Structures are given as structure tokens and as C-alpha cells.
Picture 1: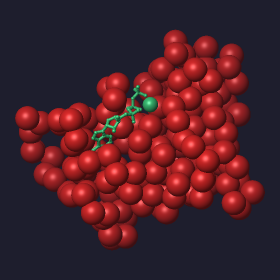
Picture 2 (picture 1 turned 180 degrees about the horizontal axis):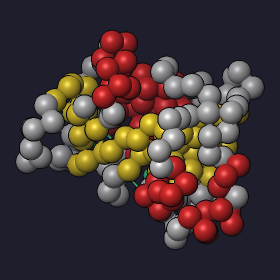
Picture 3 (picture 1 turned 90 degrees about the horizontal axis):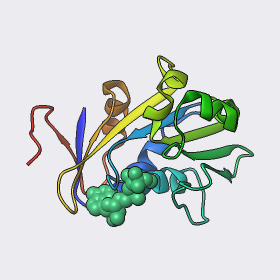
Length: 166
Ligand SMILES: Nc1ncnc2c1ncn2[C@@H]1O[C@H](COP(=O)(O)OP(=O)(O)OP(=O)(O)O)[C@@H](O)[C@H]1O
Ligand SMILES: [Mg+2]
């Protein structure tokens, strides 16, 4: 299903709502071009999980770890500078993926497709730029339906799959 975010703050709120439906062991893969809001929605997810410290893009550090209130962890990974699956494994990526006591967010997941494919604990979200302040987010139907039931935050609306980007 497709959603439109009207402004950055709405994407943060949407991230918080997504966080409320995540279970330990899940990996959230965020793919989309530069500046589409992967880090913005990551910040919302982190806030929703109880992270109060600043959440910025781990582009240079590759991985950022946050302790969560319930003795679990949030791992925020940015694969932008990682060439492929082998480089990721050399970095130690497997410690972060599908860890039972953690939720993991991955920006630029396409770099490590082979390590993520076909896992039931994977939630893939695709972000697209519409204009300076609007973004389109594609979320798998089953999870999107849960989000709709939970109630969408202000500035987030459901849109038809056929709606074209202008
Ligand atoms: N509706 C929106 N939702 C999210 N971000 C938005 C929106 N409208 C404008 N923006 C802006 O787009 C930018 C998104 O930046 P962000 O760092 O989250 O992108 P990114 O996808 O993580 O990029 P990168 O690939 O470099 O990591 C921010 O400057 C944000 O303010
Ligand atoms: Mg980013």
C-alpha cells in the first residue's frame, strides 16, 4: 500500500507509529534515493522505541547502537558505503541482522539484498521523493493494514497505487 507524507514531521510521526507495531528480531529495510527521508523515518522509529538521544545518519560509522528501555537494542545501519554482501559480512553485519533482542533499521539495504531476502522478520519500506515537502512511502499490505487500523498520524494519507508521481 502507498502512503503520502505531507511534511518531515509527519514522517517522524509515521515512524513512531511503525515502531509501535515492531517486534524484537525484526529488520526494517528502508530503500529510496538520497534525501527521500530514510533517516527521518528512522528517527521516528527510534523515538517510538524510546530513544531520546539524537538520531543521525550512521553513514560514516556504518552502525549505530541505541539501548532501549526494555534491555533491548536498536541498531541503525547505513550500507551506503558498503560495496556488497561480502564487505558487509567482513564488517560483522550478521551480528546486527535478525538479532532476537534487537530491532534493526537498514538504510541502503539493496547493498546487502542477499542477506535480507525472503525473511518473515523483514519489513521493507520504499521511499520516493514527490516534491520538497512530500514523500511517498510503499509498505507491504499486511503491515500497512495494521498501521491503518492503529490510526494514521496527521499529515499521512493512504493513496492509491495508481497515483502517479508528479
Ligand atoms: N515528507 C517528508 N518526509 C521526510 N523528509 C522530508 C519530507 N519533506 C522534506 N523532507 C526532507 O528531506 C530530507 C530527508 O533527509 P534524510 O537524511 O532523511 O534522507 P535519507 O533518505 O536518509 O538520505 P541518505 O540516502 O543521504 O541517507 C530532510 O532534509 C527532510 O527535512
Ligand atoms: Mg540517511
